[in-house]
Length: 334
Image (cartoon, rainbow, N blue to C red; front, side):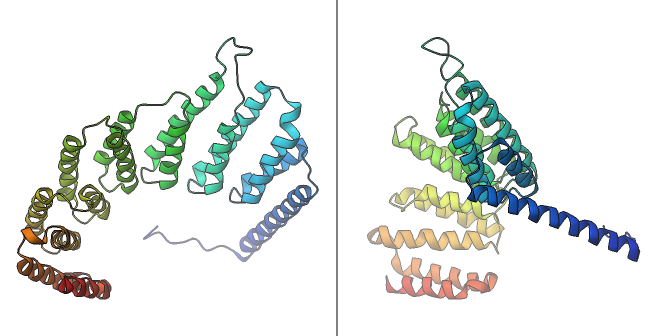
């Protein structure tokens, strides 16, 4: 911490720490060698499973060991287990990965193993047409959705968790209505407009709802423009908002919407005179007017306005001068 004097360690303390670290490294390498040797020998025993547990608790990024663990379960442990025992073994692995995710929430292999566990839950507890054959699946997948929501509460922008959430939603034995997921993204976005993953998830949900006719696209888009405009005025420097706005505009076939949104952004630029995203978006949308509605606009005035905005962009964003030069060259050729 700033202003706090660091305590000087004695030579003896430093040497003791070095020896301790050296011992831990020696033990880790010995355990790693043992696990890899067992893997090579195709050892599917419970002892091998315990060894992988020890190693993964130390290093959960060792994806080869996660793969080996799955082979042990499938080839050695599951064949000698009842369905209920298999379910309990998988729950143990979900607990193992949960502990790892609390420390390493962005390691792909941990998320992959959780998905594998859930996809291998056996039928039960019902049997022979009696009881609910998918009861365990329903229980564990519903719990998984709850777990993902808790992880996203802790880190709302963890894109690994958002990607995994889509997997969970697609895998639920009893699907949730997509409108509930739309409401979920609304809550996440309104708590933090800078949540790119939430905007991305929202675009996927809306695309599905629009394509199937479960949501009126025209009315819904107008509501989205209201939401994103609120976000633009709240934090005009946040790129996730502008990327979502471009997704809403799309290819710019609707001139009325283009004109309206250009006016909104122009008004914002008058307040935020050095806003790179305002300028970039105005250039982008005016280029769409030149491309798609050339017969209905003043090409000369639009071209001059774009060139003026590009000059300003070179000043506020000099690192992308070459990109703005290319855009200007393209505009002058239209």
